[in-house]
Image 1: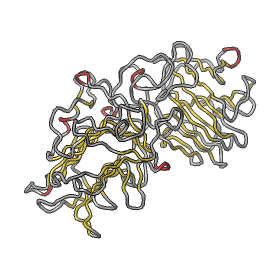
Image 2 (image 1 turned 180 degrees about the horizontal axis):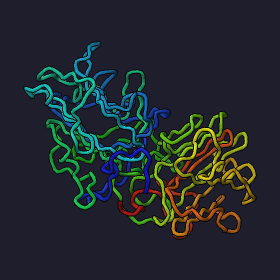
Image 3 (image 1 turned 90 degrees about the horizontal axis):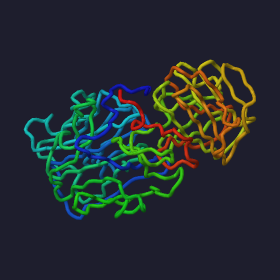
Image 4 (image 1 turned 90 degrees about the vertical axis):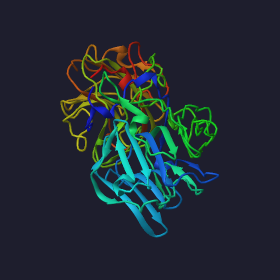
Length: 463
């Protein structure tokens, strides 16, 4: 397994301690103006509270609201330079603010964020405590703490948001899972997660404490509808449900309820949307500038400039397993798309897929295959509304392609000898085109070939 940009193995949660499992996450797309909202009926403890949740980033820049109150009051966000921020406003006055010097730019992994507030503390720096993956963050470029006994806007009767900071319409682009809010206690991460004794990874565990009046837990497990009593249901027992806004549970590429989670478990039969784990997406750190990715980094668009490539966020190596993904073309313009595999080191900006020795592509325009700037006849052409399956057989080092469920070239491998790695599923446009990847975080359009699995941590060998 290889994950470009991953700085810390603790970011990849695997099987949770004590059998605690997270079944689903919700994907928030800023372009959809997607968020959750709730207005408390009565105020809770505005001096002492804890927010905890799992976050998998999609956008790595801009203001991304994680948890906020009102138009510009209390805001926890992923900031424009990939830092974490929290601040309080009282009208036009900024009463407190934290901005981390550490940045968080790994789109391939789940971060566990805990923010604990206790303004009754005599020592100013104890009034706000921020933790990421179990470790307290103590280095800040800005550190302005609130006055002792300050009442935050959190737990007031003003509308609260998840995935949205109302000032200037700052919507979040990320996946969120297993969110807890504790009214009246400032807790440490050990209440919600722990280090797996076998793997050394930071993993979720069941919370066993009380929640307080306005406390809640959002597991996002019920995706039967996008309502406050299903997708936004509070499972703490308090009934503090949240209303989904512009979130969809309709099957297909627009479905925001996915099985991309911080815990890995389940059996993969090749149909997609089954096994739980940290799934591959497209990597904003490994793409050409003319390529645009969105919708949880599963939607791929290309402008007319150059021939940009974009890699998946998780790589595969020879001997690590057989993996399958699908790309559904929605718009075909110009000369169409190219799909296949790349190795790190190939240019993502100024070369088409297969232009050098580290790329292997299947070209939609005429069905040819490309490697090392050489092409040959391979399969059928493809375009709008076609589903292309890409199958890397790591057991033999072969690459196969499928069009609408039909193996191309009579099932003969397009390429062989791929016996090193890591290799990354890749889209590389000749010019124009739009489509959606599915690495198995939702049901495949066509069942994967026998012996092939979705690309996620549950199906990768232990590291």
